[in-house]
Length: 206
Image (cartoon, rainbow, N blue to C red; front, side, top):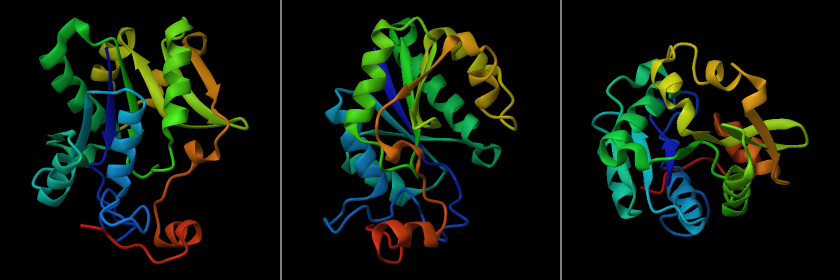
C-alpha cells in the first residue's frame, strides 16, 4: 500500500495568502490543493493526507471537500520535514507494516500531473531503489517516493536540515525518473511567479 502526502503547512509569507487555497483555474472552487488531490486519486491513491497548520479551518474544510484526510503539524515552523514526519506517524498508527511507501509532494507544485505520478509508481514497482524522484531535463523536482526502508531515517532526521539528508545519504538507493513534464520542477512562491504562469494576480478560491 502506498499513501500520498501533500505538504501544506507553510506560512505562505512570500505569496501573501494561503497557497493551498490559491485558484488553480477558472473552474469554480478548483484550488492548488484540490488539483493535487484529484490527480493523485486519478493515479489510484485511496489514502491521501494533507498536512497543514494548527487551526487552519479553511484548509481543513477544503481537504474534507476533496475527500482527503487533514492532519495538523503541531510544529510547522520547523519546516517541511516536520510535516512529513507528522504524516508518517499518522500513517504508521493507522496502517503499520501494511504501508509500503509514501509519495510526497508540496502543495505549491500543483502542475504535478497524474501521468507523472503514475510513472513514479510504475518505476517503483520494478526498481530496487528506495527513493524515486521525478525529474525533467536533468532538473529534479517532485513528487518523491520513499519506500518503507527509509521511514526510520526520515522520522529521526533533523527537521532543520530537511529530507534532503536522507535523499542524498546513499546515491545508490536513489533513482531519478524523467517524467517528461516540466511541471514537476515548478513551484509557486511569489505573486510574480503565479502571475507569469496563470496570467492573473493570485487569488484564493475559498
